[in-house]
Image (cartoon, rainbow, N blue to C red; front, side, top):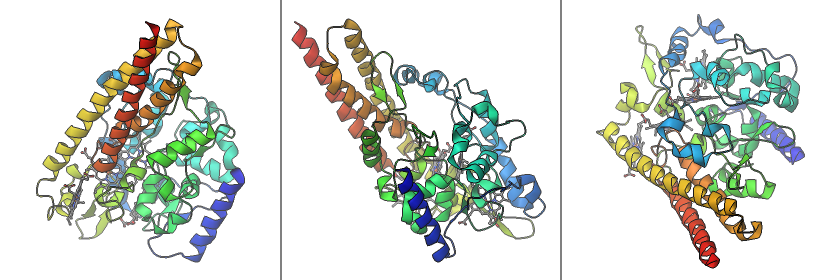
Length: 401
Ligand code: HEC
Ligand code: HEC
Ligand code: HEC
Ligand code: HEC
């Protein structure tokens, strides 16, 4: 497995060297002694980009999901997210939010998507950096997602992928994926920590494999789970923010045509009439500049998007309530001691699968806006698996009498 990944990476790197076409992302070279040039040192050269980058601090509101959606206290029981699950906010807060969360951190791999200072350790020292103790990374003064993360030490129109597991996960498709999508896909993706090396990895080797069905099969084949629910005994998967997969997934209207940058990084004009990419990553609904590019087809983008989101959130919560009921019922069946593991096996498997598809939508950050067709299909699957699990329980309970 490991060898395949290394081979894949080598091929990717050779391909990129061979087809270094404009607009295609580069992959960072590994080596020793790479150092991070911090964002502050680019301020003079790119004052507008720098100012917009610092404006990510304005996105500071946090919602505590365990209070907003109490069902997850049951659904994620046995995992830290059942206790603390703050919503995402601006990149400016990555490191401080990591340090402040009440969830336990065992290893340095938790820094993967927070700071380039850690990324550079993985480039210099290889996968062994991921399994260092969490405390061994000095968090004082660490820069949040920095210029290095997306551009290495050459900020400008070229994107360099510094999180090399993404290059492994898309394989040779890297050449056909817009570089701006790749820059965000370094973190806004579903990932796992490899059971042996504890390195950050993604469940696939080609873009076409990064869909909810194939990723589930990947984890099944590996026998992987993130945690076990202590009351139901189900080995659970925890999906993580699959924005990249959703935007580029089947059913996406704009994925591949509009990039993450087209919808979240406006092309602004400064006082001198020069244009630059805003690095303040905002909702398209918060930028008049972005919306001007949508107006020809969406006369009321906000109303349209909110309509999709309202329906999606309503459906997700309703199915989540069923998932909670299933979890409680299965826990009761286990606690009753009346049934063997063999009798409970089908129900547990359906619970695991139903939750995977539900979570895929619940944790995706656009609430349906990125790809409502894919999200609705996932919710259909979740509903079907949860209902089938409930039927299994009905049958078991009937067999008691
Ligand atoms: C190095 C990892 C990393 C990369 C690369 C990255 N992000 Fe993020 N992003 C995060 C993390 C982590 C958070 C949550 C930060 C927090 O809450 O403290 C976040 C938060 C956000 C938010 C705020 C979400 C909210 O609910 O307010 C937006 C928008 C966003 N990212 C968009 C992007 C876009 C667009 C790109 C590509 C141009 C990108 N990100 C690249 C890690 C990353
Ligand atoms: C066609 C436009 C479009 C594209 C392309 C797009 N997004 Fe979005 N994105 C949206 C919309 C619309 C929302 C919902 C905004 C809202 O609720 O205000 C959103 C929401 C988000 C959020 C939550 C932000 C928040 O403020 O709540 C994140 C994070 C995000 N997108 C990341 C990405 C990433 C990463 C990509 C590329 C892989 C991407 N988006 C591609 C339109 C787009
Ligand atoms: C999360 C990823 C990300 C980070 C962090 C980031 N950039 Fe960018 N940058 C991009 C993307 C995406 C583009 C647009 C690429 C494209 O057009 O395909 C871009 C474009 C640029 C450009 C060319 C467009 C322009 O405005 O002239 C410059 C210069 C630039 N970035 C500088 C910086 C600097 C300086 C920093 C740090 C302060 C930084 N970037 C941080 C993703 C990032
Ligand atoms: C050339 C016309 C056109 C332009 C320009 C356009 N869109 Fe769309 N958009 C569409 C069509 C058509 C749909 C599908 C409508 C439907 O499903 O009913 C759509 C759907 C969407 C959706 C919902 C996707 C889903 O999966 O349900 C979002 C969000 C969206 N557009 C955002 C944007 C944003 C943001 C911009 C500007 C950056 C934009 N669009 C520009 C034609 C356009």
